[in-house]
Length: 149
Image (tube, rainbow, N blue to C red; front, side, top):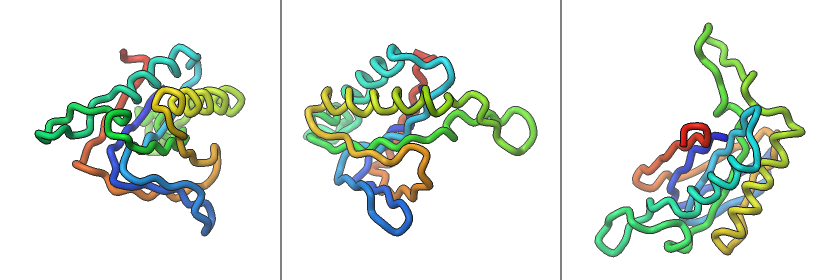
């Protein structure tokens, strides 16, 4: 699994012209599920997301987690994180997990993260054409691949 974690002052998902989800300060997490990913990948990334110290403490040092900061989380599925660009100019998504594998792992990530942080995790809609808006705070963007741990 691959995650792009962004510290935000706010983020939202709109589907069609309707606001679907939004958060205040916290994390926007883009989630890509790769063929071969398992529950072990979910467990690892939930721990990393919940405990990642990327929020400022009283001295302005990134020393607090989303839990410590009381931040919100918005998780959005994004198969394009698995794009292969080695050949040609059109990305290939052959490494993205099929729907029947990706959906349960994405949902497990969201529910376990909610349990870990003690608050709901807002979500996009798997497979939907979504418009994601955010204000990146810092900017702080962290990329994590569970296969490179």
